[in-house]
Image 1 (cartoon, helix red, strand yellow):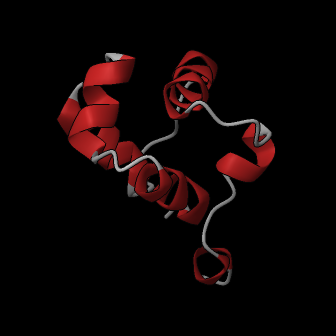
Image 2 (image 1 turned 180 degrees about the vertical axis):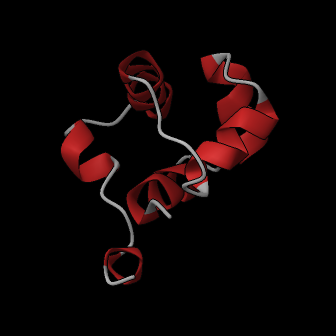
Length: 71
C-alpha cells in the first residue's frame, strides 16, 4: 500500500517486524495499517519516519500506491 515505506525498509534492510519493534506498534496493527485496513495516527507516522531515519516528508513517505487511488 505504501511503496515509499517499502522502499525505505529495503534500503535499510529492515523487515516489518523490525519496524514494529522500533516504533512500538504491535506487528498485527502495523500490518493492518500498511495494508490500508485502518489509518496511521500522527504519532505512529512520526515514529515510522524516525525509525526509517529518512528525510522524506511524511506526505511522500505515506503516499499510497497509484493503483489504490484508482479504486
